[in-house]
Length: 235
Image (cartoon, rainbow, N blue to C red; front, top):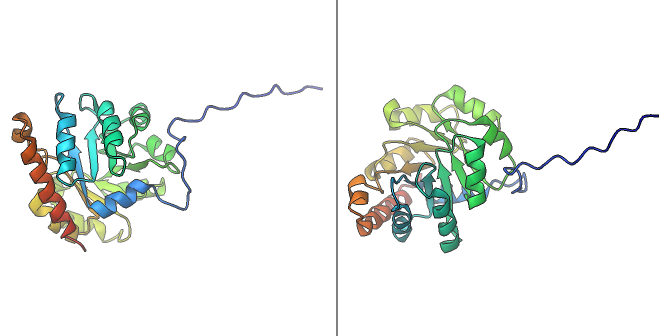
């Protein structure tokens, strides 16, 4: 009689460790829908942490740091320690390896310019929210079928901005959509009216000239303007 050898337990994916109740969405989703603004920080040198703190002082409660930013993981770790009640994530996550690094650093949400299906599948029941990038109805259907709870429409401005957002929203009225790329503080309201549940603001807050001159007080002021504009732009 042959007895099968005991199989060693399969290692748990690092992306699957932070489980949540499947009936409840990730907490980051509620934070994004409440804030309506995701401040997107992309820095080329060591000023990322200072710029992030400036945005938070201006009222930003949801902040994304792009994966290519120098020291991005350390920045996320610092922000999680400094502001435990706020929501921080990593953007332009293009691989599972980068996703694992971001999650270990404490990221509460991840975003990509497109849909990385392996990340989406792995995080389906995770506390960490994954926001895949989409552009067409077909891509939205594909992402939602794979478990996406919210999508990022990118790049929205080159497709027509608010008009494209409005047209894309009609077939998917209950799906939260984040409008991303080329959005200004003054266009927050019009994108909300077109159906966006939230917007990503990059240069509108982290102005390149202000960043280059390290004018963090002015960055705080832009963050404050954006936050107030979003709060006043309720549906």
